[in-house]
Length: 452
Image (cartoon, rainbow, N blue to C red; front, side, top):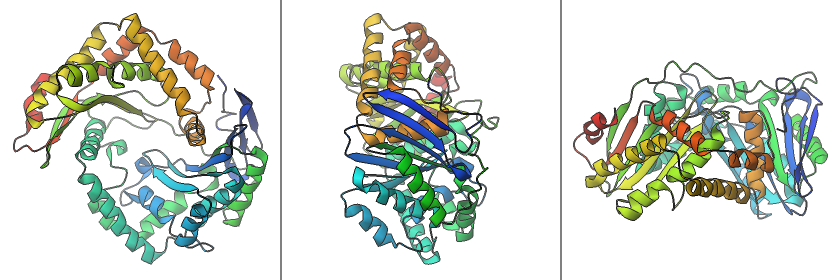
């Protein structure tokens, strides 16, 4: 294992270098103020991707601030003392670059992909946004309307509705169960002062992680980051270290019993989600979980695809999925089917999960699953954006960096019994069923006795 951790999270001036093959290498530095900079130099690349990460997400919002993290994601593109919203957009358009942002339950990232020669510009613009956003009152009210439209758009997508309700069912009153973007009620109610308070409290040097990959010079980038943050006016005491990585929180508020949720929508299909609690992000069995997903519902040769779609013709889209956080995770099975076929589909979803839990996969199926995961891992890291994101996850979520070769070894070491035992654990969790479709009755509740 190539560890990124130096002490609890590193101290200013500490460095780490890891060779990643083919001349590429990862470096990590801790700058004054506790800013962490991680780069992966990729020889021959003429593009570069950069991300400015904050270890704060929707789960970190207090009462009266729900939706603030996602609100900030929008507002930071609306201007600084030195750049208008148009100037920010034009800076990237003028060089054929891309810039965007993403809010998660445990982090926020502002990122860009540009030619390597334009990386200094991208660094300057993104850090200007992060450190110096105006959060203008007029722009705030305008963007409130935009976010309400975004939520309305998501509510019009039955698949999005199903996934939101599924997370709420699995995590219950825990902050992980809240929608990342907030609800219409919370967005309409949140005042600018609350969002401004959230910004000032959570956006600071000790929380900032800069990751970049591609045609990047680590030392040059560190100088540019330091200059940009200082220009933004953030105080950066030399002795300050990075914020501690997220510690698991209290999970006693999570449901201990299964649930059934029916959401009535005038759709042509029913959207079905079945599952429950999964693995935390740092669980060593996460490699086995990727193989389990490949076997169960991750490809055209997977059990769910073959049984639900190919043999029975019950669905066009069917798959398994998982996500992990610091103190909890979720695992689920999804299918979109005709409203009258939901009972048949749910029965097959349960049957296939329990079959994998009771009998190890044969050697051919196991190797096919391992091969799919290994191939997907390598192909997914062919571009600089993926490698930039991997550095952010390593620093903020896992606290360790593994080379591709180390990860491939871990995946290839997964056994059929590992997969079976993990499937058995997942199958034993309280089950939650969410059905979104054109129903007048509570179809999910009718099926609940079959889930217990």
